[in-house]
Amino acid sequence: MDLYVQKFGGSSVANTERIFNVARIVTDTYKEGHNVVVVVSAQGDTTDDLLEKAAEINENPSKREMDVLLSTGEQISISLLAMAIEKLGFPVVSLTGWQAGFLSDSNHGNAKIRRINTERLETELDKRNIVIVAGFQGLNRYDNITTLGRGGSDTSAVALAASLHAQRCQIFTDVDGVYTADPRIVKNAKKLDAITYDEMLELASLGAQILHNRSVEMAKKYNVELEVLSSLEKTKGTIVKEVVKVEKMLIKGVTKDDDIARISVIGLPDRPGIAFKIFSALAAKKVNVDIILQSIGRDGTKDISFTVAKNHKELAVQTLEEKMDILGAAKILSNDDVSKVSVVGAGMETHPGVASTMFEALFNLDINIKMIATSEIKISVLIDKKDAEKAVIAIHDAFDI
Image (tube, rainbow, N blue to C red; front, side, top):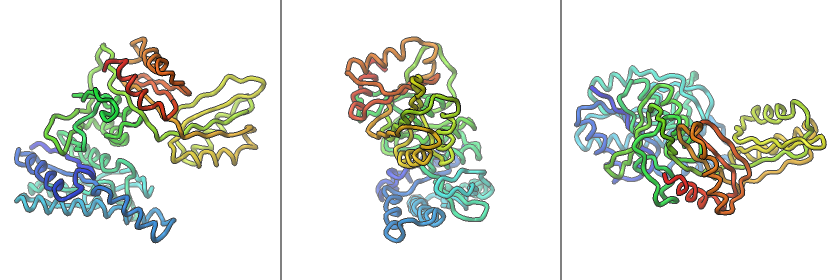
């Protein structure tokens, strides 16, 4: 008997009507003869509401207690969905993350799944129960509740699919698949029938907010076939899997990421070891760095610029300011009024002209490029935020995706 893992985000279970809609999707799958494990997120704005409640009590609560609080959002969702499925007349059981066997490390707020003890899940499936699991949460070695951080429910679903050897992991969202660009920005964006893990991982990392990159990494590692589809419309979605590389160059998407800050360290001594000192200091503070640009040394000095997530800007600047004497830098500049615009597609490296087409589209709009980064399947540029949307539209049109 085939097993399907189905994940529903917060907007899919935001109210009573939508909960019953999800219940019908789940029970229709069950009626087709499949075993079903469902992962759900907290309803709508529940997590934001819980964060506000915490702030009213304590402006600086411990991460452990925040995990205890935030994990309750998913528990509300699983119980309400189970009640709806009960009302439709189907056997169902809801399980918290720890009841479902999720064992994690102790990094509260952003824990990693170490393993899943599937014994309880397998017992419930053998009874032909529909199993509803709270996403986003687990239990560490000290029996403390942990949460898995951003995209945690997607990651929970993929981990379950891998551990239970599911035939497919379906991610239901409020969009009906993966598009070549954000359809709210690019009116002629096209929905993709299929996309590779690597392409989806790049899109997720570069600002496409459909799947979280952690879940895609896990799906690729364990060869879990994903399907992204709508919980609100009964339409075919997008399959994410390992696809045989074809000779034809395919641009799969154009994305923008506004959650970016540029930091420039000016007037550094032009000698070995300076870059190491900068980026080792940032790594010690767990600041992830993306695009890096180093100027050609002149008059014994050089400049190094790089990008970080916007919420890491202040920490990065503070960390480097504390190292000014060691670095010998003249000054540190930062700017978060920038966006990263990227094109993604397998085979770009073997097809000349991709970069020139992208850059020509920006030139025609008189958009200045501040930084450039490339890989086998992507080209990213840093530009002023005010230009980002029109840049995405122009690039999408230039490639005639």
